[in-house]
Amino acid sequence: MATCPRCKGHLTDSHRCPRRPIFVAAEVVAAGVAGGMAGFLLVFAFDPNGRQISDMESLMSVVIGACLAIWVNRALRS
Ligand SMILES: [Zn+2]
Image (cartoon, rainbow, N blue to C red):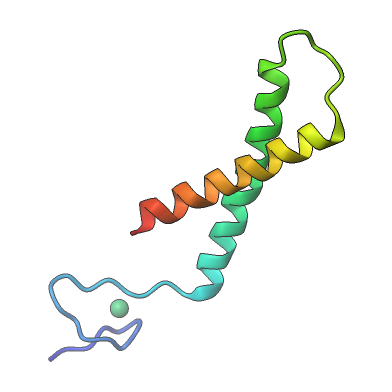
């Protein structure tokens, strides 16, 4: 059986090279950062009265946004 020139795995019809862990980790981090920023911006966008947002609220929105982004990222992978 032929082997893949890139990953040396068996070159079947459905072959896809395994992703390097460093790229997977970088993608998860990137998704987390993007999600955190999106969550932070959403809190500002939907804040009805333009009141002062506490550190706790902004931290929560960042964490939740990051978790959601990573979860979606992983869900799309599998
Ligand atoms: Zn390959």
